[in-house]
Image 1 (cartoon, rainbow, N blue to C red):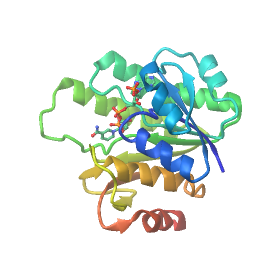
Image 2: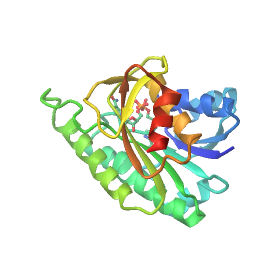
Image 3: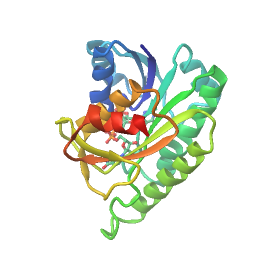
Image 4: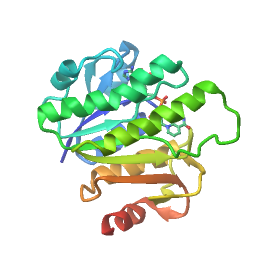
Length: 218
Ligand SMILES: NC(=O)c1ccc[n+]([C@@H]2O[C@H](COP(=O)([O-])OP(=O)(O)OC[C@H]3O[C@@H](n4cnc5c(N)ncnc54)[C@H](OP(=O)(O)O)[C@@H]3O)[C@@H](O)[C@H]2O)c1
C-alpha cells in the first residue's frame, strides 16, 4: 500500500479520489490551504498538512512530503487569474518534483487537460493562458526523471463516476465525470507499471479496470 500526498485533495476530483484511496488501504495526506476543510479531513481519514502551494518553497514542500511514496497534483487555479495560474498550475508541479527528488520519491501523477479543450469557443485570454501553462508544465514534467503519469481529462463534469471511460494516448476531445477521473487515478496508482505515459481521458464505454489494464500491457 502507498503513502499518497495529494495537492487538491478537497477539489472536485480530489474529494472523490481521497476516500477511494483510503478505502483501498492507502494512507492519504492532503495539502490543506483552508481550515474550513478540517472536518472533511477528519471525516474521511485523510491526514492534513497545512499550506498553500503557491506560497510554499521547495524546502517547505520537501518537509511536507516526508514519509510519502506517491504524489498527486489535482489542484487548479480555477480562473483566479494569470499570476495564480502560473503559481499553482505552472510552478506547483515543478516545485513538487524538486521536493520529491529531495525525499527520493519517484511516483508522480499530474492532472493536466486535453489540449483541445475549449478550442474555437473563444473562452478568453485567461483560459488560453491556463491551457498554455498546463501544456508547458506537461512538457517540463516529461523532462524530469521521476516516474510521472500525466492524465489529461476532457472538460470535467461535476458528477459521480459510472466507471465507463475512454482512456488512451490520444483521444478525440470530450467531457468526463469527475468521479471517473478519480477512479482512473486511483486505478493508475494501483497499477505502478503504467509510468512515463501521457494519457487522455473522456467518458466512454470501457470499464476503468479494463482501460488501465490495456495501458499497462503497452
Ligand atoms: N475544469 C475542467 O474542466 C478541467 C478540465 C481538465 C483538467 N482540469 C484540471 O483537473 C484538476 C482538478 O480539477 P477540479 O475541478 O477537481 O479542481 P477544483 O474543484 O477547482 O479544486 C482545486 C483544488 O486545488 C486546491 N488548491 C487550489 N489552489 C491551491 C493552492 N494554492 N494551494 C493548495 N491547494 C490549492 C483547492 O483547494 P480548496 O479546496 O481549498 O479550494 C482544491 O482542493 C485541475 O488540475 C484542473 O486544472 C480541469
